[in-house]
Image (cartoon, rainbow, N blue to C red; front, top):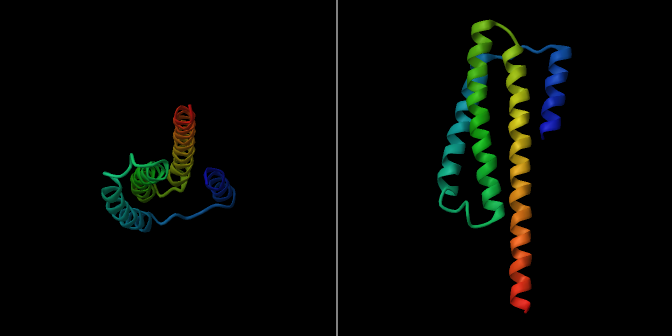
Length: 123
């Protein structure tokens, strides 16, 4: 996802884009509202498995991205420039990469602890 996002930022930088600040803000707020509902549902279950923890991480990162998009929309309106949108796009790509590595690390730990538990029960 991060590679696709960076490729899109590069494409929009080269070919130009005209982000619509108010639309960015409205869509980000709607998305954030949906994410809040998901986070509320996941909150008590996020430690019940790697898949639920991954959902928590992705949804939390999406909330951070939504905040960035709202700020970017405000900056696009204020500065009348595409640059804030492009900068936020690169930052969101970094957030996606960080979240991906966190999920992979959690999955590796779960696999190792599961293998250790299995070895202990076989003895």
